[in-house]
Length: 331
Image 1 (cartoon, rainbow, N blue to C red):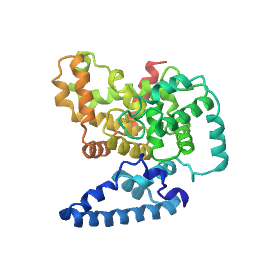
Image 2: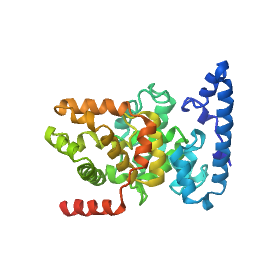
Image 3: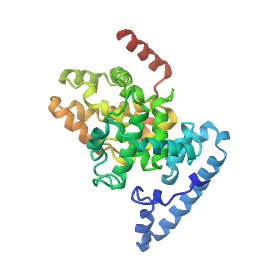
Image 4: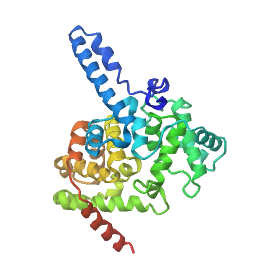
C-alpha cells in the first residue's frame, strides 16, 4: 500500500503542480463550482485506479488500454509504469542496499555524467539549478548504472529517460526501472546505446520506410534537401521523445510506450511528421528545415499528437517486413 500513496517527496518540487489548478479556480468565484466538480471527478478517477492496482493481475486488457491511453494520474504514474514492465512493489531492502552500494563507488564515467546532468531538462524546476536535488539524484542513478553495466557504461541521452523516471519514483526505483527498460526483451533500450547503435539504426530505417509509404511527397522532399532521419529523429528514439517536446506530451508518450512498447514511438514519429507535412514541404533547404522542425516540436498540441498516434495503425507484419529488409541490407 505504501507505494500507492502520494509520498511527501512526490508532492514537492518534482510535481507538475496538478493540484495548483484547484487553487487557481478556488480563488475565482466563477470557477469555484467548476473546481469542485473537477475535484470530484478526479477523486472518482483515482478510486478507479486504486481499485485496478489492487487487482492488477485480473485487469482486462481493454480496460487497461483505455485507462492508460486517457492518461495516468500524476501521483500514480511511477507505480503504473513499474507494474506495466512487470516490476513489483518498491521498497525492497536488498535492492536499495545494492543500489546504495553502487552509488558509493567511483565510475570512469563520473566526469562525463557530471558534465551532462545540468543539460538535462534545464528549464525544469527539479533539474535546472546546479547541485539541485534533481541533479544529484540523476547523477547517482547514472553512476550506478554505469558501474553495473560496464559493457555500455554511460551514454549521453540516458539522462533524459532517467530524469523523467526520477520525477515519479525514488532513486533506487528509477535505477531498477531504467535497468529493466534497458534489458527487457520488449523494450531493450540497451540496443540504442550499444556499440554500433543497432536498435537506433533499425528505428531510423523503419521510420524512413514508413514515411516513404505514408507520405511519399514528404519523403522525396527530405531526400532532395538532404534531411536524413539521423539528423532529427535520433534524439526522439534516444530520449523517448522527452527532448524538445512539450513536457506533458513526453509524459503521455511514455505512458503509451510502457503500454505498447517501442512500436508506439514509430506511431508518434510518423503522425508528427505527417501533421507537419505542409509546413515541412515549404522549407527550401536543410538549414531551414531543421529549425522549423524544432519549433514545430516545441509547439506540438499534446492531445492532437496522442489522439493521432493512438489511432494510427502500423501492423506487426509491416514491421516484420522492414526488419527483414534491414537485416538483409546489413548482412
